[in-house]
Length: 132
Image (cartoon, rainbow, N blue to C red; front, side, top):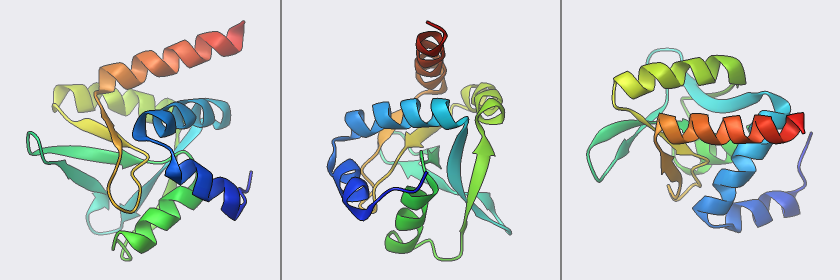
């Protein structure tokens, strides 16, 4: 599903918590998430300034990953899709490694930084809704 420029602008203008909810709904519906990959270094990791931990950056659509890549200075990275089921498995590893997830960062690095446990629980809630 391609988004219009107006939809993109409206979604980017939302607060991190609203973008987080959009991410959960969209990723659950499409069964995929998007990230940035560099052939040399692997997936893009940002830093959590509060506790200096690695944070895995994910996006609900290719368009938002592309905007972030271009405007936040990650030109050497490629936009890549990741199967949602595989991503959910990765959350177990993130939990062990004490990593967090930067959900839907904007080009000025505003994102909802979530624990793997919270993400997994929120996806489960969304899946349960779809079953109803």
